[in-house]
Amino acid sequence: MTDIRKIDREYVAGTYGRYDLAIEKGKGSRCFSYDGKEYIDFTSGIGVNSLGYCDDRWIDAVTEQLNRVQHTSNLYYTAPCAKLAEKLVKRTGMKKVFFGNSGAEANEAAIKTARKFGVTGKGENATKIITLENSFHGRTMAAITATGQEDYHRFFTPFLDGFSYCPVGDMETMKELADDEVCAIMIEPVQGEGGVKELPEEFVKEIAGLCNEKDILLIMDEVQTGAGRCGRFFCYEEYGVKPDIVSFAKGIGGGLPIGGVLLGEKCAHILTQGDHGSTYGGNPVAAAGALSVLERLDEDFLDEVREKGEIFRKELKKIRGVKAVSGMGLMIGVELERAAASEVVSEALEMGLLVLTAKDRIRLLPPLNIPYADIDEGLDILEKAIGSLDR
Ligand SMILES: *Cc1c(COP(=O)(O)O)cnc(C)c1O
Image (cartoon, rainbow, N blue to C red; front, side, top):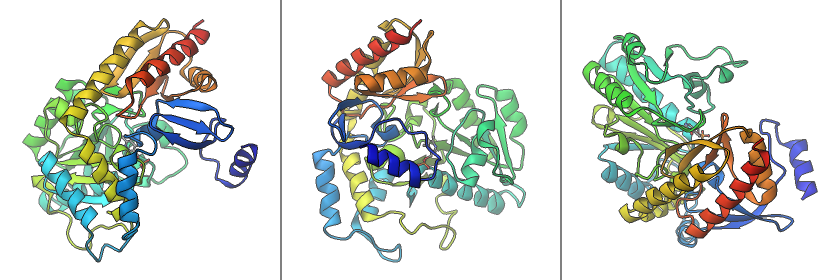
């Protein structure tokens, strides 16, 4: 165990501040370190392991495909890719899907689609995209440019042209920014990295109205909020709006790298042959994993996600030292009275519970199928961790 950490620190580029934990294996919502210590996991690998660690049916689906074909180029067809696309389109009422491998790539595809939509449909200068302050859209050059946080806008100049940032809830500014050169507005329905902050419903509805009125594409970045995380298949359903592009990744693959964009009526045929691509995009093993996740996320399952979300909220609000609880479904932010979130995370880790931070809040993204008993046990640990630091 010491060796793993030492080797990692010596050879892996230092972009991550890792906790003092090396995970050897896991099952469901529990994992084990190399020295045999057990943890309840309220993180799901940042909302990725939506069915927990090593779910049996998911492993069967993935290994079955692995024993047939692990990869082929996008010059040929495979069944998992085609079936996954069909399922996603039929379930959402969107028209087409493009597959990549991550959230940032999904947003790249969204941005390229929006720019071509603008250039070909509205005029050669119609390439501007509005995003929100405090947003997070990923780490590629376009995605950090889209990200409305100063912290991400250092060192890597020059950034892309044509992005502007609107404060959350400020419809006046949004209307001013939405001139004839704007091709898209991109929003996360719940700002994840920004602190688990759900956008006001009225604001989202007004943005959707503005997009409709001005022939601007509405892009929902559902990389973190999608695939059942917020208690609906996609979180935008909760807002009663219909986006033109939905980007997804994280939870959809259940632990394998897959992401992409769903394209609605207005922009389904914008990207044409040669416009975009990805060597791994639609990889059959990742797609088989995603199909297995989708099969599980039926309405009963989603009801249970919402119910479990309510249990978390109810119990968290009772904990001394908790000021407020935010988010939707099993995407949960915890605002603390006095304790520092980062210290609570370290303390909880010591006590056998994995939790995340998002800005100054604690963030919980437990597996969507977490057993009720693990919710109780994990929350007991969290209460103790907060209690020990709530001074
Ligand atoms: C995580 C995240 C991304 C980036 O996803 P990667 O897979 O890390 O590229 C983009 N948007 C949102 C909302 C995210 O939460």
